[in-house]
Image (cartoon, rainbow, N blue to C red; front, top):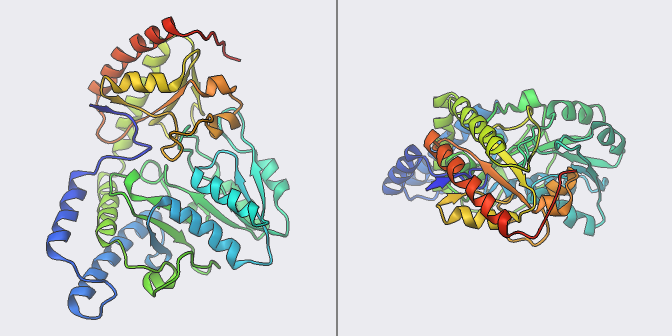
Amino acid sequence: MVYLDNNATTPLDPAVAEKMSEFLKEHFGNPSSLYPIGREVKDIINEAREIIAKALGASRSEIVFTGSGTEADNFAIRGVLNAFPEKNEMITSAIEHPAVIQTANFLEQKGVKVSYVPVDEHGMIDLEFLKEAITPQTALISIMFANNELGTIQPIETVSKIAKEKGVLIHTDAVQSFGKIDVDVNALGVDLLSISAHKIYGPKGVGALYIRKGTKISPLIYGGHQEREMRAGTENTIGIVGFGEAVRVIKERGYKDKKRIEKLSKSLKRGVEEKIPKVKFNGHEKKRIKGTLNFSFLGLEAEAILLALATKEIYVSTGSACSEGAEEESHVLSAIGLRPEIARSSIRMSLGRFNTEEDIDIVLSELPEIVEKLRQISSFEIEED
């Protein structure tokens, strides 16, 4: 099996699986209980919280665990808008993850004015549009750090400076960047930041929201005193343990996966462009997460390529895992100006810790033949703009 969909989810790291297994065997107490077996679990949760906080350059009290990155995004956006009822505007970008885009759409139905910052052909936001969109009624700016489909990295430090000058809170969805590039909340200047465990070789079902001390925000979930009354409900203890261990492994490795993944990605990109005609690369050549590659195979339907590769046990995607199955083309690819037929010909290949040179060789051996055969039976003739 060749797995090239690490932006959708990553395999569980063996060290994480072992840590979670040990925890399950030894601990079952409710962390809200006052007796010893409950307090032990509470301490273990806070150990994980400390590891994650340090990795972000934050303090332990600024980390709130959630059920996912999507929940963290919802918490940040709806929590801030609810905390500032006198303000009814927010700003986001046209290429956000569905967790942000659909939350913004929901708020629009409730009377909130949402400004969507356009992007250029590489997926970079228009900073001048952003500046002009800010008004005294703007409560929050939410711009993702790295795009999940293109890998394009946004200038969050600059966005934060613009926001601070106007007295506006800034949130960034760092789900696709945390663990791949440096993510320091103080260097970025953000007030809120979302991350998720299953994107960094941890378990599914757990995420976290960084909330800078002093930031005004309302809880999203009510019902108990957990997470300092910011997120009610008994904590996903096993998930949190795995999350903490996944971050510990990243810090221990010193991001040494990064160079190896970049090397593999470079070989894959070069091979695809050299071996297959009529291919368009989507995204920024330099300012992107290098392990994310998005290609349009002109004249074909992405789904046909994906299914053909799957028969060879090569797994890629057509975009966000949260959008798979949608009939319309990717909103991200539409936002960068691709015609619908070209957007529908695009697949994403995202590399991770466990990919090898052999994986790349297999893909470059199988993909050109698949594309050639599909084009022979395709009735489409599409030229690049």
